[in-house]
Image 1 (spheres, rainbow over the protein chains, first blue to last red):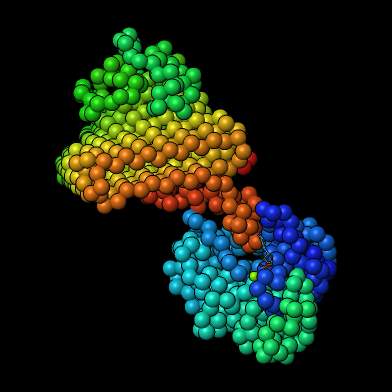
Image 2: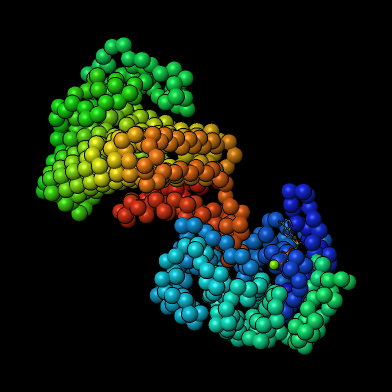
Length: 250
Length: 360
Ligand SMILES: Nc1ncnc2c1ncn2[C@@H]1O[C@H](COP(=O)(O)OP(=O)(O)O)[C@@H](O)[C@H]1O
Ligand SMILES: [Mg+2]
């Protein structure tokens, strides 16, 4: 049982024109096995929240705390956060030229498991993970995210989620750019990770459609850098009907 | 053997061709003050296959040169180490040449010829190692339809100086692919040059270099499209780390008026891994006819991409390992082209070690 606790988190982004305040006090607690949906309009700061928890250097923590099972996440380097059990499926996964998917996955698994996985079981593990996500085996030899379609990038993120077995995962708009079939396949991957590893999920999304496949326990409406309303799954239905207009003008 | 005291012009550093080179560190190779020993360090490693011979011969130069050091070598040395591959010979395994251990109290002037008869196919690897001061005039002659993959590995000890011209003369429909790897030495200056003498030739000049603290590596291409319908590609990738690491890449491509149907592209990418290093990159395309298939060039110099490092680290990979992955990835495209596994592995390990040594 793990708990990610975010308290009064305030974050600014470093821009050429100086620091701009984005997150204005975010409070959120995610336990193992729980799925929290964060929904909000574009530009409200959802990705900023995700990146700040993962430790992206572009963002500056102005105030507040983030802890995982009591350990201070904000003090950790980016790789230490992953080792502590955090995972971020990125909205825009990054291309790494010349580094093959298989080399990347094995290096990551070695880092997170503390030792290189045994080659034979590892090959089978990767093969299974790829098959489950309907990915062509040739994928393993391609360079990380290079020339991947939008859907391939997202499958690749969820494949990592399944292979790297974090405690808490943040999925930043994993649903955007996916067609219906891909959405279902990717959602099934997330649900497997939930089931197999009692994963806690922070599901960031702009649309409600992914919530048909991944059932949230809690829904948080995000606007203007903080959470403006919270509720159960039915809150998503209300958003589906009314949009974000009520919150943006607040 | 001693240097002839003819009236060679000594470069001053103001000449276009010498403006980047630290002449003071050339150990007298350029101005006639180097003591030249009677030494032929190039040796063949292992058994030569049928149709291949390696011997010393007296040969006149294949092509003219306006490089002052090449002129000095030619004035002093008539003996040429000649690797010859007979017509229609296909050699499947790479042919390895290397450097024997020599006296280190003097410099060496070396002349080398590699010739492929018509439709011969081979891979030649030269492993340049050791502690040396060496100036080399290396000429490659490709008869019609011949195909050569030519790999040179500059893995010299840290005080070594190597200046050379690697000049290929490409006849009708011949294919030449060179991979120039420079990772060791104090000063390395190589002129990979190509001259097409009949239509239909195809050339790829590839290279990787990694300079760390204090090292100077210069690669000065010249591709002369003097005939119609030839193709050339140049792609060099370099990394630099540490104070006063300095690399120079010059890509001179000339498309003469007669060279209709030319197809050429040249590319140089540099990765600056720390402050205090300097990468000069000068593509230079001269086009005298518009009747061509294509001509282009690109040159970039960048640093570590924070987004790439973040992505890798977010999967638990340490900063150090993330950097290593990114640098290996950067070089991979060209190192893969070597297609000799033992060399590829050695090179990647060397790159890791350079990175670690530079603390980048
Ligand atoms: N690097 C940046 N430079 C300038 N503004 C930025 C930068 N990153 C984010 N922002 C701004 O921060 C706000 C929140 O962005 P983001 O967290 O990406 O929102 P969301 O993911 O909810 O669409 C936006 O107004 C965006 O323009
Ligand atoms: Mg976003």
